[in-house]
Length: 142
Image 1 (tube, one colour):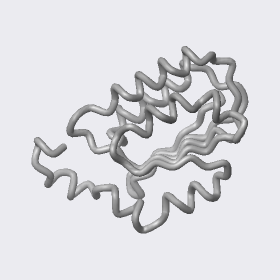
Image 2 (cartoon, helix red, strand yellow):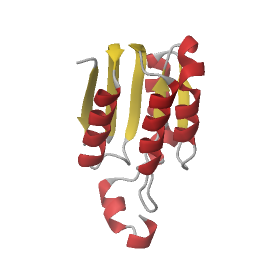
Image 3 (cartoon, rainbow, N blue to C red):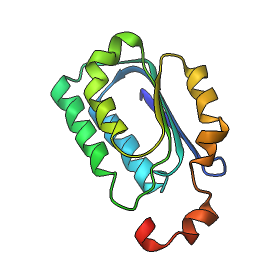
Image 4 (cartoon, rainbow, N blue to C red):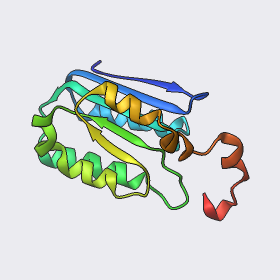
């Protein structure tokens, strides 16, 4: 399977690494795990620097729409670092635009080490709520 993920609940970090040919069903499975793990508020690293796809623009756009549907009112979204090769940007620009719409820190990188470094900055780490802070937020603010 070309899509692998790690969930570190203590660090509040969801890391995804893709290699080889990635299909839409693997992305949907990864998103199901993200939601089912209650990790939408975690910092996220999506490393697609070693991946390729045969998905067309319409299929990629459908994934983006699905991801946008996860951005429900009251759900705090954690910071997102996306690593892609520069040549893949035109294909992925629509989905990246959809991901950038919610209020949350997001950056696109071409190198994984730069993405990791950004996710570890104080401003990004401070943008996520600790579990105790999340539980203390009023329901309407979640």
